[in-house]
Structures are given as structure tokens and as C-alpha cells.
Image (cartoon, rainbow, N blue to C red; front, side, top):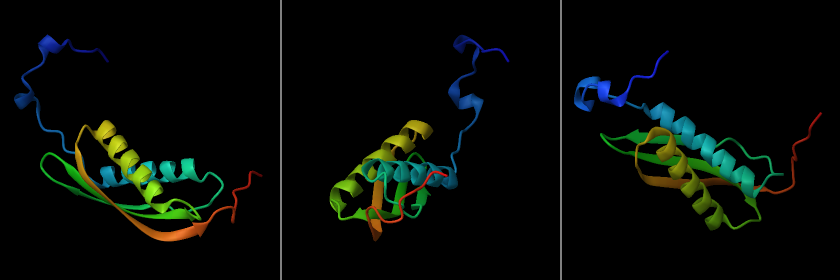
Length: 118
């Protein structure tokens, strides 16, 4: 496959439309939330985050249900998740995220259920 020089492209309005589905944004958001919680609590097994996304013409809103480790700074962890999700979704889709709502669904005691490598 050859790269086409930029000057050989038709104007953007004539090339077509790129639409990014809500499920794509949800998967990116869930993964980003999981990675953020793993960074703050690497030894705590948490349920996978549940993500929802609402797509608008030129932006997205995201809502998340997450587990966080206990004891821990719940507000700070939620802030970290929110920032990571917004950054990852915007970077990977090129679409602004205007709102990320984080619901802490459950507190999980840190250190219990540690992951084992067999």
C-alpha cells in the first residue's frame, strides 16, 4: 500500500464521514479505567469497570461504574480515573469528551485476593 501525498487528496468535505460508535468509546473508557485503578492498587483484584457512552455530533460523554481499593483515597482515585479516561478517549478517537461521570460501585479491601502467577 502506498501513501498518497496530502496535496493529492480531495477536500475533507468530499472524502466522507468518520463515525465512531458508542461501543468503541465504552471499550476504550473501560480499559483506561481498569489501567488507572491497577496503577494505584496493583495487588488488589477489582471487578472490571462498566462503561457507558453517549455520542453527540462532535463530542462524547462517558459514565463509569468502578470498584476502588479500600482503604484508599476514593476521591483521588476517582479523579485519576476521570482524567485517564478523558485523555485516552480523546487521544484514541480525536473526539472531545465533555463529561466523565464516575460512580464508585464497590470498595474492595486491598491485599485480599492477590493475583498469583502460576
